[in-house]
Image 1: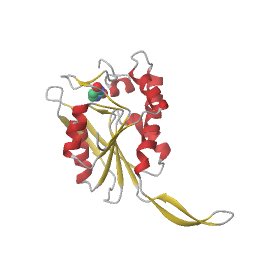
Image 2: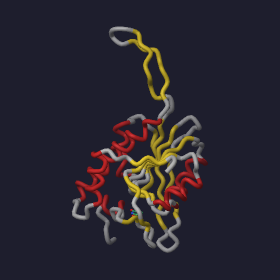
Image 3: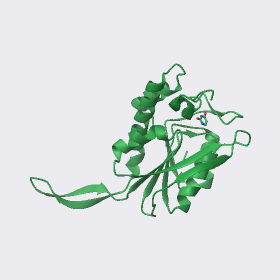
Image 4: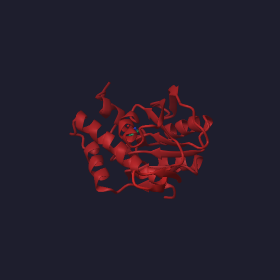
Length: 210
Ligand code: URA
């Protein structure tokens, strides 16, 4: 699928299997999610533009590459928080925003309950951390907010995506790039990805059944 990169790296697939396994304890789940934030962002960041700058090493002058655009991260609550520290390990100077979006359990539409975005300019590259791309409604709501805040270059990092979710999001945002660890085949009528990993936020925060 155009604009979608599925990361087959063994470390990514190993951590994903830990997340999928229902017997994985909460500590291992959190650690694997953070690792995946690091690894998926590392792969997604291949597309960041660089520019050469003149520096001096202790031994000689050198023209060497550095990142050209500034990076903004937007974590979609709650599950996106599981990625955040891992991603920040790659880009400690990134600005960070938060969007609280939950699903209406009947219509599966996204309901916004919190927004705190940093300043975003057209030159920045914005990475949206939204681990479960299921119906695509949450991702679209997040991307619209971020676009309205001034973003031109947006990248979505997800753990798992459904084919329907990808199609819906890319129809609305054809220039978006999506990096994911897997495209799972089924989206059930409750909006869950199958085989998936269950509710990512509940498993991350130990709130299953509440
Ligand atoms: N959100 C989740 O946490 N899991 C799914 O399977 C779909 C959406």
